[in-house]
Picture 1 (cartoon, rainbow, N blue to C red):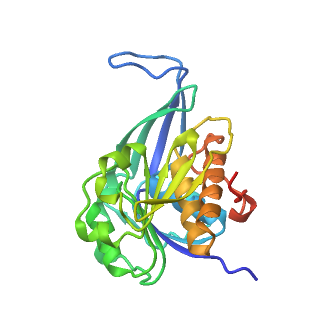
Picture 2 (cartoon, rainbow, N blue to C red):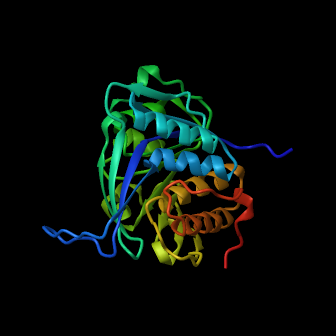
Length: 281
């Protein structure tokens, strides 16, 4: 029997209100051809759902409001196979993201964090040895607290980019960044592992500042880039904690990211991780 890897995700849970338009408006401009959808989102929830659907046992630490949106988002996570027992219900509105996606799949996003800012570390139960992946759509103090409570493989997707406390930066085993985040965070360049995503040009993995693997992007029809980075992060983390060779883990993560951009949803369905091509091309 194959053992399913375990993963704890710490991050945001949002309701995504998405307007699809032919062309995004310029500053001060109104466009009137939008089609509105509601769907589950938030970087933490996206990564947790992706990891669960790729085959991991996933626990999500986060917060929702005591409102219909929170109930809806918890149900979606439960249906994806995510353990939501550590999702706190707080006295704030559930987080919301306002998203505009144009005909090329590119997006602009405004996040209204709401409940995501009220995670209470005193109510958290953290597995001290489980691998962890987190992002920065929740308070950095929450992420730093989890980092001090665990000794497992710790992954940080520093998005949105911001200055990192030195103790947190030194605790991270793997940073996952895009080109903009990499430029804004020079302190991560010599980290033990850094995965740099390059969009249509694939991704690169560095160890202590030296390139150790490079993967090409998998061709895909782009309809939505919102959850692609989160799917990539989940897949790469799972591959590495499974013990896959870095080049294999990176190529599979690119393939999973490509599957995500071809789907309208921020939390699409996925095949098991090992069904995606892992041989570098």
